[in-house]
Each structure stands twice: as structure tokens, then as C-alpha cells.
Image (cartoon, rainbow, N blue to C red; front, side, top):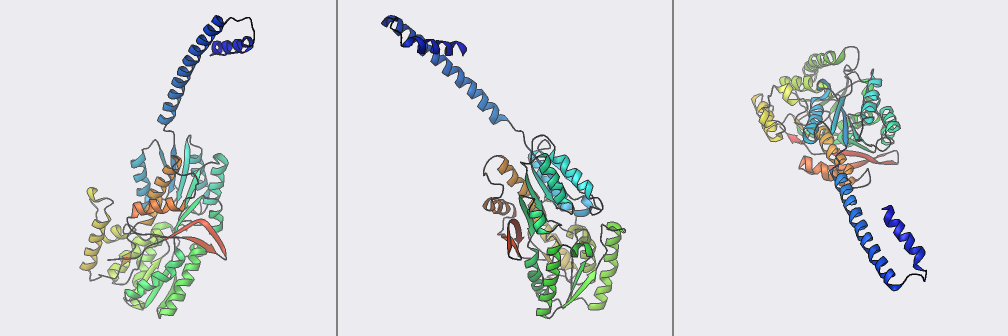
Length: 404
């Protein structure tokens, strides 16, 4: 290349000189043309190699922080499904501790560890338990270009929405109406709401509790505000589950079988479903509505390997269990496991962003597209408006009910 440049320089310097004869000029022009052609070919080959090398590059990773099997098995399984789809070389899965309230530093450290991985492009924190805001701050300080999606947040909306690029959650506020309407349809005369102070410190969960009470009052249903043990407390998950197993039958004895039960905690769904089923009461939905959330374990349903992920199969198995106990129509949920959708559809969304299919980190049309592809049903997605302030990246999902 230096020789080509020198020839061009020499020609430019000498081109204006009248010492060249026409024959010499012709020879020089021919030589320069040849050299330029060669240079063009060489550069073209070099660029081609570079382009091919870039296209072949597959250096990207997605990190997923989710709960353990004991906290929420379906979310953990969804993360493993993403690993299976994209490969261990591209997907890093870490869990937050069961006692995440006491061990927020562990959550922060795990998120920071993923953010620091070479070629990490996106993080999914689902659930975004307390400590996630600080974890996101730490991740941004390590890798500011990350796409960060927070799902089912356990922190105030304004805190998590100001840090994550996108927030996925259930439409908790609208459920304050739809859940009561569903319970009434199932014959409820009493509505028992199991929670604990930590959850009631969450703005949306507290607001939903208030709406549940208001709507129960409007429909003539007695609302019972019951305090359960916090699974992150001293008694742990097993102690909190044992409380539900003992207290739910007492509530049924006190208020009758036309009592609907709801708990705000994932770890309490299995004992609650089991107790409601055995006591003949009513169960409108789990906290994270899904056919997988609590039902298989509570009802003793074993899912064969070839039926894993087959919602139609599981639905029929649950309906059969309801019929055995004369419970048909007394239990329900949403037809799609939203927490699993947040992880699996969220990972697909992140991969599309990494691939450059769209530029902005928040693309509502694409979010809906990937949700629809996963759920195969229509999904209502709304943005949060709180005290006159809209959070356009705080996306709330709502579906209709699947009756068993």
C-alpha cells in the first residue's frame, strides 16, 4: 500500500511537470491504474474477511436472576428453559436467597457478578425482590450499556422504574376488582386475604388490598384481613406454610365453605390450595396466576416428561381433580403462567434487542409481540399511572380467568 501511495504522490508532484513525454505519461497512467486495481482488490478482500469475521461473532450473554425451587419453582424452570434454548455459553442463571429480606447483599453481589461477565448484554431480574434497585445501580456502574428488565418488583414503582429499562408485573390494581368479581361468580360470601406487614409495605400490594375490601363491600362480601407468617421471618418458609395448613381449616370452620382465600406470597400457595381443596372452599387465583403455580404440588399431579410445558394437559388434570372432590368451578387461575412468560418472552425480547432488531431498549410493540407469541392468547398491557405520574416503562399485564 505504501508503494501505491508513493506512486500516486510522485505522479501528483510530477503530473504538472512538462518534462514527461506523452509516452511516459501513458505508461505511468497505465501503471497507476494497474496498481489501483490491485489495491482495490486487496482492500475488498480484506474488508470481506473482516465482514465475515464480524458476522460470525457470537459474543453475547443474558443474565437471569430468579428464585430458588422452594420459593417459586416455575420461575426457576423458566430460566432453565432459556438456558436450554440459547445454550449455557449465552445464558447465566443465578438465584436470590430464600431469605432475601435479610440477605440483600447476596442479591446485589449476584447481580453484580453477572453484570461483570464478559459480553454480558442484558439482565432479567425476575422476581425483582427488595435490594434490586441497589443491585441495578451496582450493575450500571459496572456495565452502563446493559438492558435491564425487572419483573414482579418488590420495591416501590418509582424506585424500580427509575432504574430498570423495563418493568414487567401483574396489573395488581385491576385485580382488586376482577378477583372479587371472580370470587362472587364462584359463590363467595366471605373473602380471606392472607398477607403480612412486609408485603403490606409495598405500595401496589397495599393499594390492591384496599381495593379488594372496597369491592367486597360493594358486592356484599365480607372481607377478612388475615395476617400470616412471613416466609422470610424467623419461622422460615416451612413455618409459614405450616401456619396456613393449620389456619385455613379454622377459617373454613368459622366462615363456611363459601369462603374465598387469597395469599400475597408465592411460597404459601401450595398449602393454601391444598387446604382449600380439602375443605371445599373457594380459590379465585394464586398471587402469580398460572396453572403451574401451586396446583400440581398441592393436588399431587405428576407431569410426565413428554407433557412438561403442556398447559392443556395440566388443565385437564386439574379439572379431573376438581371433579373428584365435587369442586368443579370452585378454583381458577389465569390461563398463562405470567412469571414464566416474563422470563422466557423477556429473554427473547432481550436477544432481539442484542441482535439489533430494534434500537430503543423500551419498545412496547415488541414487548406485546413477544408476550403474544408466548401466551398465544390476547393480553392486556397497561402502563402504571400513580398520583398523576405515568411510568411508561412500568408495564402491567392482565388476563381473563381459566375455571377448573
